[in-house]
Length: 210
Image 1 (cartoon, helix red, strand yellow):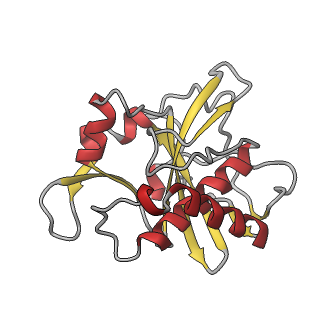
Image 2: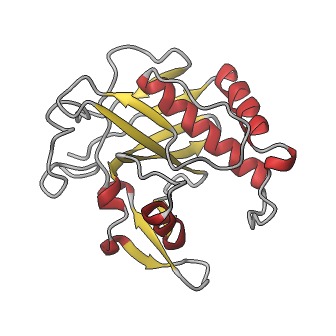
């Protein structure tokens, strides 16, 4: 049996918060003049939506400081289990079947820079259609940034990306009740905290694996 992944509906309230968040972080002097995105405002919006979805999922707050980019960490969450407090970086894609991707140059900066921090885990959020977003799964930073995940860039550019598909990721634990701002439509069935948090990623079950 293939496991389902959580799908959430983004409400008008969350959408407005995402708009305010991206405007605060990327307005004026905080915009990246070197951005090669065809629509950087749209990309920032989608990123903010994904971050707010995960923040609401775990009942945490987001950083509203006006700045471009971040220090490599979006959220901090206390699992309440043996693993204790973890740090999270949310990766959001506008592609419904998109993968978790990071350029090797960005990964190298996280590994070597004093300004960037390596999170405990990365979480992938994908826009499915309209106001529907799927929480595709998560993996440990050390696993995602391992050289074994490198592959050529799809656009033909020089360099490589770290890349993990949704089937390579661990599912999130499904909450017992509806999210305050995101209504749960479809629930995954694997656990994130407790025994999952201490699991060996080479042996634990992942999304899409029966």
